Image (tube, rainbow, N blue to C red; front, top):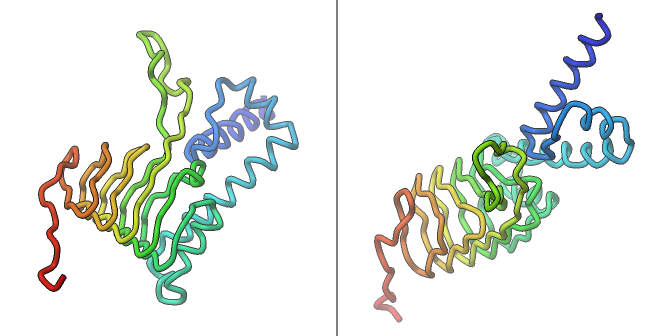
Length: 201
């Protein structure tokens, strides 16, 4: 009937929204209905929806015209541990639900369209016949140290540390720790240059 079709449509849209926000992956429709009817579920998810909206607001380039540091402020509100004088470009993807696992030290530069992941799915017990989406999430802290720079569209994978003064080239996929004062590039990222001490010192 119409009511059943309407409920299925709305629940499908909500499931898609929550799944897209990486807020929660619900095992089945029945479980979804039970949790959706609970006030704790609704308010908990509303909180994360607001944080997601804030993170998306921070992506737009027009923000810089009015308040250059607004992105940093929003990221701190979401839960990122951040130092001073951090520059964040537009359309940078932040792992909103795991933001507290991201630490950014002073004077870091993150360029447009960079992606930073702070979680992964644990597939240690993933076998033929399993469903990937049902495998458990596992947080992995990411640390970007003082003075580091992340290039355009670079991808920082979970559990990585970017060393002090290191530079990650545009489009690089960083799967391992980056040593201090090096330049990495490529997929996966590899060291292509070790920076030297300035003659002035």
